[in-house]
Length: 219
Image 1 (spheres, rainbow, N blue to C red):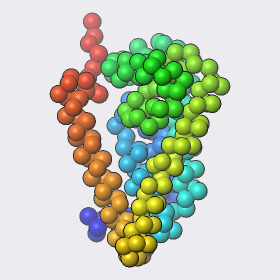
Image 2 (cartoon, rainbow, N blue to C red):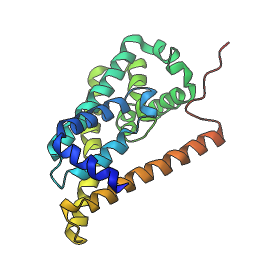
Image 3 (cartoon, helix red, strand yellow):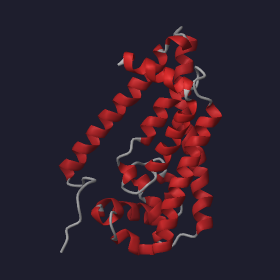
């Protein structure tokens, strides 16, 4: 695995703009209904944050790329729901995921406006609440007043743990930036945890009959 990561780190160092684009797209696609429930955007952002302490990526640009992607993704989903209202919840592809749509509606009714804030940190509902907020008639000013602060909190929450972890490994464990050992440890840990959590959630949904891919019965 390290033989794969070293060339990857070297490539990112030479083509940083591609990494920023990847961060932007990961955050954007994670906010798209249905797509966002399977795109590992958070994992990608957490993993690439390991490249900030060594200088391969710049912290302000990483935060900006992630935040802009999330704003565009959430905003696009909201406006689709806002224009089509509840009809969007009963059309393809959302009609194929009735349980997630129902959960997002329940989440929205339970927390009201704050559902937009909390959902930013709760996958896979994160990909459904913005479109649900628009479909249920939430005013644009109210949506953005909550969504933008949520994203401004979400982006650092996904980037800074990797930055701080790698910095701590270099500072207190004596690992050198150019050795990439700390980066390997962080990236492999993030990917490993994501796989374990993903498999665990899959088994839970399968066991309780609430799988993401369960289709709505057609008459």
